[in-house]
Length: 187
Image (cartoon, rainbow, N blue to C red):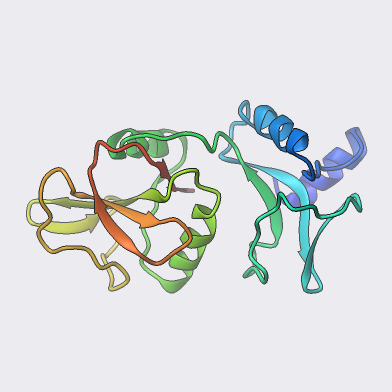
């Protein structure tokens, strides 16, 4: 469902999309989002004419961390469902392949911008990606070409053979694959 469809549905059947302006709102929204079948749920947050606002006219508040000028199409607010999920790299890979397509690969500047933005809501300082080292080389598990956006050691020590992105940054790290981190799935 698109953001506009969600807005129309909520205005027809309820009052509006949710606004999150207090700690209680955030707790309620996160609790309700856990039953979602998607990784994110729409909120009433919208970017238009150079600024963010809640569509129900609530004050923006200080709980909202959003980019000052988001790239299209990232101009509608979503709350990440179940954002406390932390898994090993293998668990995250299985979860993403079962519920989405795969762990993300980052092969273009647009991919990197999207990954940085999505990682900002992470509860861990790094997030798992689909970057993996095996048989002497790094690769994306979805078979995308590696590209030149990733800089990791050419021959990492075991068990540091899984690729993570520093949340909100362009820093790549080889991490212990058994470490539990948040992760980014591709759709």
